[in-house]
Length: 274
Image 1 (cartoon, rainbow, N blue to C red):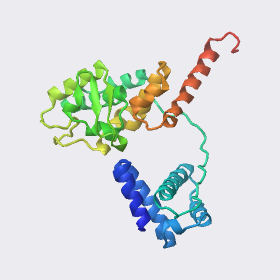
Image 2 (image 1 turned 90 degrees about the vertical axis):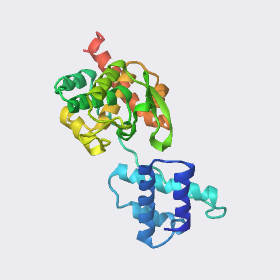
Image 3 (image 1 turned 135 degrees about the vertical axis):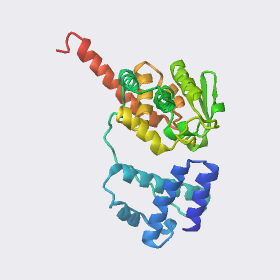
Image 4 (image 1 turned 180 degrees about the horizontal axis):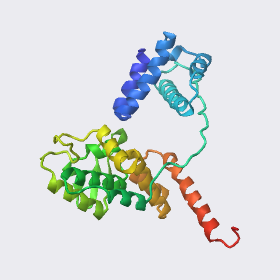
């Protein structure tokens, strides 16, 4: 790894405080390019970089690598005077807009009604699904929650993406389910979500729970939370704050849902919709 790349990784780790997953992605993307050419990234011209990128057909994968390269050269341009008179800047590949998958409140509640809540494990599964839908947390954030992160009707998310804190309200129905689970749990732990051994619940286990009852990943419940807010008339910037998105551009994917809902409303209600 070149000195410039090491400096960039240190910058995004300490100064930018990006998440562990983001740091690993940047490190992998950029170090693989240096390994491929056996040279420092800073010394590679645009032609070589484009030749390297041409092997990636998946547009989302390509855009992630483009993001890594652009971030690296932006950093070098600012930090190392004279390193590049003109920094390379690659345009992202356009990806067709698509509606994120989500579930309705009725679909979620129907699935919850099938959970056997006579055991503490069943109460946990019920509470976890309802909690994810009621708070819109990322699964990594949810599994990091400790008991003292919840105060009355509020949740403090301390382990958010990019190490940023945020506070979100919790619906009383989700809190009631949470209290029932906590009361029935045979273990004492600072962690909120536990497995059958009393250890912190893993991402894989959480995935299996939502897949078992809803046939979706935990992230779909986050989309469902945001979608319910947008369709209910919530301001996009409020949703951005609740989701913990650094940029409003990330949240704007949900405007497609809003437009789709408006179109359906017109088609079903307007006398000229035919």
